[in-house]
Length: 344
Image 1: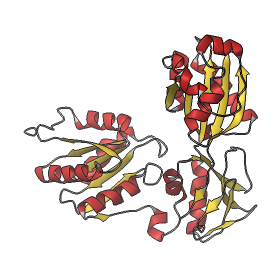
Image 2: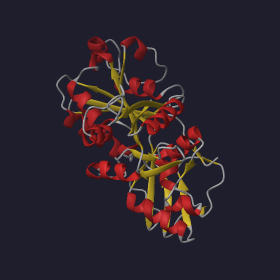
Image 3: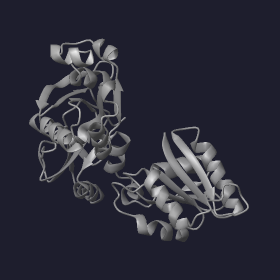
Image 4: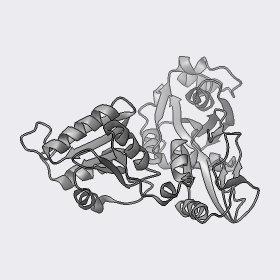
């Protein structure tokens, strides 16, 4: 569930915030509503600046129900980057307009504003240039399809080319379904283009926007006491040797004996990746051909941790794309599902 924090400043605004929360809670959002009204049990009892700081640190989206000036002044000290800032939306006290302020595409503010507008029967006020002109918004599309954007400068170049009516090339290492957006065409070279790939160095165009699908499951085994830095070095090196961007990592998997291994836990936190472990019995039941170690089996109860956990973590039908690689007490493997790009 994605967390959204809402704040209202008047009784009418609070009623609107409650309607928004009720509507969003039916979908993918976990809503928390607050107010500055002292007589209401939802009163935040902290300065608005502190509430906003907490919202930026803990929520995927922040909704101010009230004047846009209040929202702008509140968020200004905490804005860092469109890559990391949460979606911020302003809704007026009467629930007539939903206005995304920041992180419209990458943060999903435009999409959330439209969703809020549907809940309220309001008008979404979208001001980003590509949306206003009806052009393909590549950063928003990438976010919706769980694609990492490697280069905001290149993303801007793609949008600028589309707005100027210039051709934008497109290359994909994966099958594509649906018709390409207007202004985008298959090409092997050109001035500006998009490539969907796992390889961070791919550059078929003079200005290449690389979009990396987050679909690679990383299986890790390690000796006790390995640090996050040592694990990161092993994972980075393994992916690099096989030409796979670290942006493609979707999650980390291991045996349950490593559930609380400090280095693994810290590594996953630093890479912002989910971490899941499996029992020896679950790993042993994984079908496939894996490298086996009698020593490992004697210690943990299964002949291979990294390969089996990578495949199990990736889900049914996954295939191993990197067999076990050993690096100074850390073993790394990777698996992924088949993948298809969709414009449908």
